Image (cartoon, rainbow over all chains, first blue to last red; front, side, top):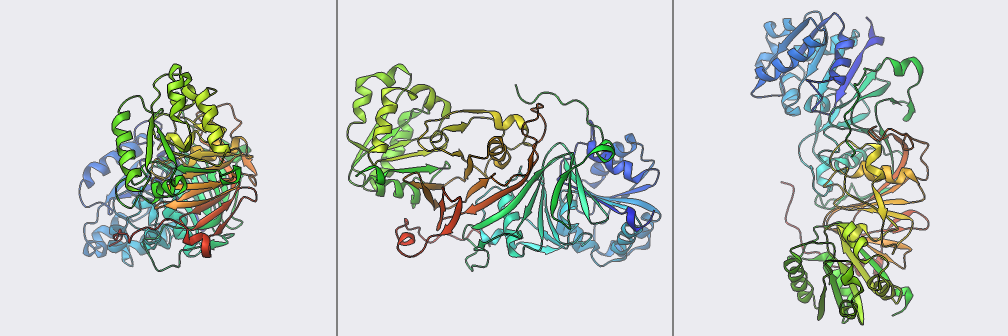
Length: 286
Length: 286
């Protein structure tokens, strides 16, 4: 494994853990015969139950070595005993919870350094929900769900783990009506591409350069590079957003996205065949 | 009043009826000293209470003549006594409920003809929620809320009242996570512009040529004219949508949209001053 093999698997939350497990299957495939560390650092309680769920799911998918990296305080993130859990890990999986717990407890600690090394050595770093948001340099934090989207919503940002640059990730995307807040975050500085990931949906980022979509839902890409007007710089944080000329792509399993060219395309031939198989869905439409 | 004065006020549902009433104020301003007919045809029960709410709100806004056009069967829509309620009306307001009740009960009846005449003679036709969806030639009907958006969601369409062409309206837009289904409806035939209206938000369409936004939320315009790929024509209705290169505008009070040029612009000067006044909002952001 080398740097070219590095992979991020960024999941919009509520990925299936008991049936087809399409997304966790992709994580397991990438980890292969290696060691997988599940970190429940984003959670303040119920960590054992959640770890047990993931351990069961990943073992059923053939991952032989699954460990729990539970960190309940920043002090613990500097302990050698915790650090050793990451020894020889091929993958790290961040569960959901509170994204600020992840960054405030492991940011700039030996644990973070080790995770970064695992990634740079060609490992796989995965995260769901809060664990998805932390992947980028800048992350959205609480607020702005299911209400009219005002300027103030999109300024609730904090520094993330920085495993991928140039993007802002949002999760539980359509389920929690977060389009407006992500558009607002993009409008602040259109150098960042907005990536909104639905539940039970994920992007698999290869070499930091592009991704493909897996899972049952959609992934929305918000490109602000052609925006001709926005009111995001106005001082009134309660004012509803107004932004013209956003380019948007709605992607689903079978689609790829080139982060450099900012262009989507369909997966064809062998690449598409490698995708995790989904069993026949039961009819949703009568 | 002549044809050039005709106005549609299309509301995303849950418009404020007891405080500032920004949107109902706009309806009242357009009706002026004329007669306003509120139609509860979209509802199967509770019509009296709902009419009483609107009557109170509109009277408080200075509308002197408010009548209830309650129609509980298609037979009633052909009765002279019902038709006479519309005599000399300057405006008609459709409440929420079920859009299919509106079209199935009054479509192609003398009631519909009279409403069409009121509009063509320079009147105002307003509608909220289901009453908003029916305005267009083609309307979205049930399904597709808050779940992954599959191809099947966007084919649940039915013929509307046809007071405005070239658009498909959706309401309770961000609150019910309907972006995907509207994108799907637009992708079916990009000649239609998608207009998604949040709750307590409305568009005021003048002469069928353009609109401006009023209310506290946002209005999203989905323009599919530049779409380069979509899977909407695939036969599997359960497949998640995939559509590239949508142009989207997020608009709020103070924005205009030109339906012919498909271009947004800011309202300036006297036009902006005519907008209904909103009292100082209480802080939503701590």
